[in-house]
Structures are given as structure tokens and as C-alpha cells.
Length: 158
Length: 158
DNA sequence: GTATGAAATTTCAAGGTTGAAATATTTTGT
DNA sequence: ACAAAATATTTCAACCTTGAAATTTCATAC
Image 1 (cartoon, each protein chain N blue to C red):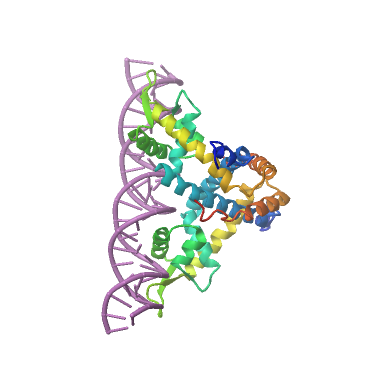
Image 2: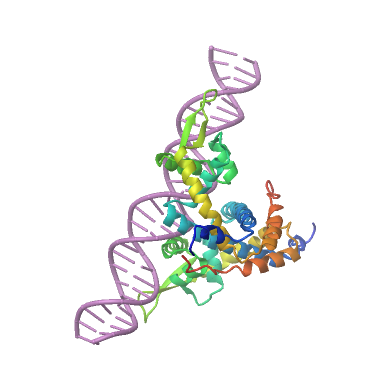
């Protein structure tokens, strides 16, 4: 780390390819997200973030803390507050104060929430199958595997 | 299309794999986006949408119409208005009324805007190389190719 | 030339998103 | 017991995002 060459040395080969990959990755997920948003709105008068929260809660029958939701969904705490607020006022979700620790509240799907989510999930799976129809099963698996390894290796770097 | 089997017939095989792929795709791009957002804020006091607009304008020395930007970036018209407004007030971008058609205005990067974008772009490429470091060059190319075919085949469906 | 419709943009309300500050509660150190 | 640190959540301002309505200007038909 002695000369001005450091900046150059730091560059991996293949960064151009990675940049292109990132652009296409982003573009693909934007297109799909946009289509899903439209359909969720049209058919269920809902949104993707609401769907995500309900999906998380559906898989956790005993409920989740706000911070669990936030961590699992990779979004901020304040964000979850707002989404859950609206889901509560729609009767799909309930907050229960927990004795033992009065800072936290357990969030669960209501009966109505479960029903509504099941209706959405059924269609949602078909939509994805539809939107990703060009990717055949084998490719889907390979892509999936590549993306899986893709955890947050860089967390905590400068 | 005569029986209750229709719903089942409509399903492609491999939808489970596609669903998993979608979840991982979304998760990956969320993680990367979040990291980029943080770094752009920290080092340039900027945001991803601003970066995207500037990148588009950088590649179009003669400028773009608002609607070109909107189409190219896959975001709504109203959205672009706000982002460009803020870039203008920061002196990175300028709107020029065009004679011939007074409905439109040509948006271009200012001198300062070009400089600033170049500074950002240099670092940005390294960031992506860093964040996608686990994907080797060959995989990046394959993934890229798969995602490319991924245009909007479904546009205009029900 | 004048109405009528088309096109480009802006405005606006509602919701999503973050990061930081504020609140409330629990835990820990002494 | 008490102060201080840690934890869970909410609040808030600023920005992003959409879709629909409003505005301004242009093009077309008559």
C-alpha cells in the first residue's frame, strides 16, 4: 500500500461484467415488481409491502415482534410500523401487548388476514410462474443457487 | 375448458422453482440497493434515483425529454419531475425550453453535473464489483444473458 | 379558424422508505 | 435501590413512487 497504484490494484477483473449483471438484475426485478404492484392493487386493493408482511406472519402462527418483521423483511423499523398500522386498521392483523415485556408487542394475522392472504398467495404463485415463464425449471434452479450464495458477505465493511 | 380442472391445467410445472427464484432475486437486489443507498448518501449525499437520472443524462449529451427519462428508467412521469427538480436546484441538471414545441423541455447535465457524475461512477463501479464479488466473471456473463432475455414478454396480458 | 382530440408535463394524494431522534421499558453495574 | 446502558418501538422530516387529474401546447378535422 505504498503507491498511487493501489486504486488500480484493488480492481478485480470482470467488474464490467458484474456491473452489467447488476443493471439487468435491477431492471428485471423492477419490471416484475411493477407488474405485481399493479395486479395486487387491481385484484386485492393491496400492495407488495403489505403482501410481504402478511406472508411473513402467515409462516409464523405464533406471531412476530415488530423487530423480527423488520429484520426478516430487510426494511427499517419505522417502515414496519406504518405498514402494520394500516393492516391493523383493515382488520387483517392484530397487535397484542405481551406481559413480561411491555416494550414489545406480538403481531399476528387475524382470521380475516389468513383468509385474505391465502386468496392472494394462490394467485401470486401463478403470476410469478407467468412472469418468469421464460426461465425453464433447470435454469430457475441454477439461478436460484447462484443467488443464494449471495448473502451479505460485505456486511460490516467500510 | 369444461371442468373444474382448468385451474390446475393452467399451471406450468416448475412454478415452485420460479417462486423461489423470484424471492432470491428480490432479496439480492434489495440487499445491494440498500448498501448502495447507504454509500451514495455517505460519500456523495445523494440517492440511487438521482444517480440513475444522472447516468441516463450522461450517456445522452444532447439531453433527454422528461418522457424519455421516464420510459428509460421505468418510472412514472411524476416521479421524474420531482427528482429532476431537486437536481436542478442543486445545479447538476438544467431544463431548457425548446422552441418548436413548448410543451417539452430538454434536460441535460450541467458541467458540475458531469463532474459529479464521473466522480460517482468511478466509485460506483468498484462498489458493484465488491458487492458482486462472489460471482465470478463466467457466472456473471451467464446470469446476465439469462436476465437479458427477460424483457417484458407479458406486457399487455390480462 | 375553431373545436376536438392528442401529447408532454406538472400537480396532488396516498403510501412506501430511510435514518435519526424521541419514548418507554427492561437490564446491568455498583 | 439507582443510575446508566441496552432494547423495542414510534415519531418525524425528507425523499421516492404511483396513478389519476389538471394544465399547457400542439395537431387535426371540418
